[in-house]
Image 1: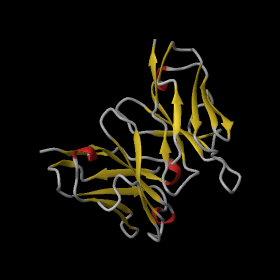
Image 2: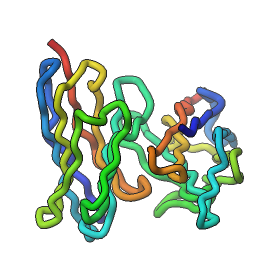
Image 3: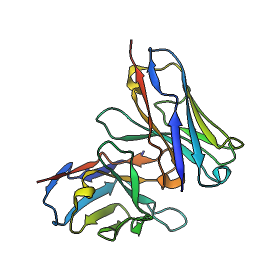
Length: 114
Length: 114
């Protein structure tokens, strides 16, 4: 099974600061169609997860362009420029390339206020 | 607007059964694969089941295979998860999600305890 490793487990930031979160996969996430099915989700406190970025770098509907995703093969990064209070919560990466047998999530990165 | 509304959760004893529902609106339900994903208290996300748009294929995580059954009724825009032989480790918030994790419901809480 594919293992997704996120770092760091937590981040303390000040409003307006920029941060990056890393997600590494145990296998390449390039599918047979040439696309890479690596996504980023945000779970705000007390809320259900929301997909921010799909297929490495595509912003979801209504997601501000302060969020950006980069990477390829097994190594991916989510960057948040100019963090705002509404950005606080737990960020998850997720792969949907290797299905079946399953979708796999990273363990999450908790973004907190400094 | 896409909406997914889960229901059916509750407190049950180990070994018992429960059936969750997820009512979809705002999109053509019968055209999309659907998922169940769960989150144990203070833990990360775990994908548990997928059903194709036409019910032709179903997939399960090893942790629930043989105990849980995913199904859907496209005439009612409703996704189901029938859970049997429940264990304490099945205690979690259960979310339904649309294809590629694009949309999530608010979740329904299942607590398995004596």
